[in-house]
Every structure is written in C-alpha cells, then in structure tokens.
Length: 280
Length: 309
Image 1 (cartoon, rainbow over the protein chains, first blue to last red):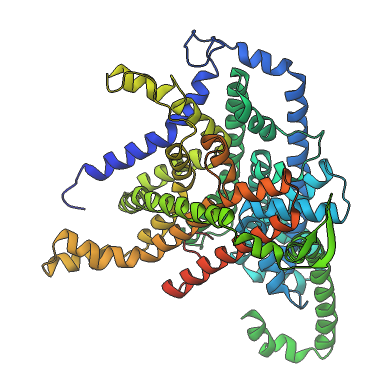
Image 2 (cartoon, rainbow over the protein chains, first blue to last red):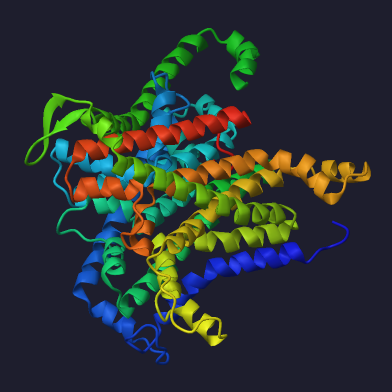
C-alpha cells in the first residue's frame, strides 16, 4: 500500500492485452476488403453485406435465436418455480434433485453431449430442434435457478408473512410480492442462459439433426474446413450481441440486489455479481 | 425465526380459531410449493438422471456387429480402454491437462493476486475487463488464434518483420498451439478462483509478518500464499477437469495431431459408432473428474469450489 511497484500494473495490463488481441484481430479482419485474409486490402463492409445475403447463414441465425429463446424461457419457468418452491416443499430428495439439476453445467460438456446423443436415440426423440431445445434447456436451468435462489435468500420473509396475515393466498403472495422482487434476478438468469445457448457448440454438435444448423455449428465447420471473411463478420456480430446480452444481464443482477435490499451489504452484492461470471 | 416469535405472540394465543386456519394454509402452502417443484423433478429425472444412468448401463453392453447395441453384459468396453493405444490417449490427455494447468496457474495466480490488491474502483473495472473475453464465444477466440498462428499470420509477420525468423513458422496445428489455446480458454477460471480467495485475505496479517521481520518473499510464502491456497487449488480443479474434455480446441488448433480423451469419445461416437465404448470412456472420465474434486475437498477442507458459486 505504501511504496507502489509498477510491476503488478504492468503485468495485469500485459495479460489483459493478450486476452484481447485474438478477439480484436477477428473484428478488425471482418472489415478487411481483401478476400485473402492475410493481406490487408482496406476497410470495407462488404462481408457484412455478403453475410446477410447468405441464405444458409440466415437460416442458422433464425434457428439459433429460436433455440435460445425457447430454451431460456423454458428454463425461466422451471428454474424460477423450483427456486421458489424448493425451500418450502417437504418432497423427498430435494437436496439430491437440486444437486443433480446443476450437473449439466458441472460435468465436462463432452460427456453431457455424449449422454444426450445416446439417450435421445434410446427414447427415439427425433434429432433436430427438439433435441437441441431439451439439451439447451438442461444447461440453462441452473443459471436461472442459482440466480433466483441467491436473490430469494435476501428477501425479508416478513413481507410474505404480513401479506398472508392480511388474507393473501399463496398465489397472491407469489404474484404480488415474490415475483416482482425476484424479477430482475429471473431476467438476469434468462439473459445469461440465452447467451450460453447462443454460443454453445459442443453439446449442439452431438444432439443436432442432419438438417438443423445453428450459428456456432456453422462457424465450427468453417473453422475446420476453411474460413471465408464472411465468418469474421459473423463472429463480430455474435460478439457484439453476446456482450450486449451479458451487460444487460449484469445490469439486472445489480438492480436485483440494490433495489429493495438496502440493508444487504456490498459483500453479498458482489457475490451475486461474481456468480454470474463464474457459473459458466 | 419469525414463526418463533409468532407462536407465543398474543394474537395467536387470543384467537381460538387461529391454529386450525393456520394448519389449512400450511396444507395449501405445501401443495403450492410441491406443485411448483414438480417440473424440475420431472425434467431432472428425465433428462439428467436418465441419460447419466443410461450412460453407465450402456458402457456394460455389447456393441452390435452392424449398428446399435446388444443387450448383453460385457466388461469388454472397459478392458478395451486398457489397450496401449487408448491408454496412451489417456496419458496424453493427462499430460496436456497437467501442462495446461501448470501454465494457467503460473499466469493466473499472479493476476488474481495482484488484482485483489487493487483499489475498489480498479477491481470493478478489472472485473468488467475480464468479463468481456470470458463471455466471448470460445469459437471466436479460437479463430483469433488461427489468425495469429497460421502461416503468414500475425505472429509470422511480426517475427519476420523484426527479423527474428526468415520463413513462416508452421505454428498452427502443433502441440504448442493447442497448449496456448487451452491456457487461453481456461486462465479466467484460475484468475477468478485466486482472486476470490485473495480478496478475502486480511492484509494486516501480511503487514504483521513484515513488522516481525519477514522479508516480502517470506511474508508472501508463509502468509499470503498459504491463505490463498484454497483459491489456487480450486483454480487447478476448474482448469484440469475441462482441459481433458475440450476436444474442439485440439481439433481446431491441433488439426488431428493431438488426440485427447475428448476427441476419442467424439470419434467413437460419431465416426466409429461404437457407443458402448464411448460410454465407457465417459464413465472413466467422470470418475477421474470426481476423484479430482474429492481430492481437492479432502486437501483443502472446503466443501464448495472456491469462487465457483
């Protein structure tokens, strides 16, 4: 604290720069006029134009958006209901179910992908959008569940008690008190889940059907076979949208902590912020 | 706590009808709560437990001659893993994972540690700066490394520009490229784990050690390092486990030259179509993963992975 060494600052800056360089390169080359990507041919938006004319990519984009919407919303319903109900229910094995439901983001992705592939073919689920949606929902649920659960811990129980004393039903309490209080946490979780679904490659590789492509799958095959500058443009667009979603999510998470809980200390607040970064 | 106060409160004692009414509302509460957890029970049992159980079952089944599986019990899939070819894959995977983890620790530990010593404002800025690459799709980041590593790519241009090398190095599709890609993908986990542990560190202890005559290095080793060890260990677990499964990094940056357990599983599943064998490989990988986590818990005495939740 007293004598300030420059070394730590330099080190942090250097490592950060290394983290950003690959991403920046992809973005910069997306504006490269030249077809050969190792040559710089001046600035241009040509690849973005091409991108929007590419029917395959547009279809993959529709698929990706649809998939992310369906899975994050299903996760929102299942995860929120579970987070609200779990502390109150007397159902058996809730501890185990709680643990098992977070497994999809704990175990290596490749194992999750593999078990889904064999299991879906066992229960004869047609490969394609349905299998993708089920698989994505499975890893979206923990995001919503964990964030809502963390938020519920911070809510003063006397609100609900007071409402019940004044004659509110369980449903009234949920709808009028609990839900508004946890809504920012739900939104934050849903947005994170949406971003994760939009980015997922490994699990999608295993569970997709022959005719269903998503954007990450499209990029993955291109990276393996050979890239066109169009992919740079696509990557850049995906980067921008992921960032927008994650930032919005963090904003909601912060709101979820700060709005009603004045008493909550900053430590807990940063705890929620941390978990956003780390559940991945 | 609230119920405790309430039970003895005059309101309850005075009104005679209250207990029965409360009981009724308790039933309702039980019902509502139970109904609301039904979806997660069903989903988890059907789509998490089911697949995992099937994976274990499948790993003991025989592969059919042409396609699919036979309902016959066999140990063959597991004894298959003991074949030198596959053992070598496991060995290579573990080697690469250890390499990766070592480098990740060397890069990430100082980062997390230094970060914890920043002022509150800079900590928040740093967090934000880290979040961007962390949340960027791994494909985009991999693509960035392709641009850097490929022949006549960025690195070649720089090296030839300053006259260090004459001809393009063949960096893409090498072991080093895979290691770099792995480190790059996993270093944030280490940073967050170390940071969250170093953040809680009481710096007065370090100062006390210094006052008692310890050199900065001694103070670091005896105080800071020991207290941040749980963070480092959880970072190691968080790095080691995924690095065995990240098949697509080896796939894209290693170009079929580096075969990991992950690649092997994918190959058996998609190309060789030997599902029971792929299942057996996954079971072994799961067991290795669990052992790592159990070991970590035993050593550190911490229940949750530091910085994970």
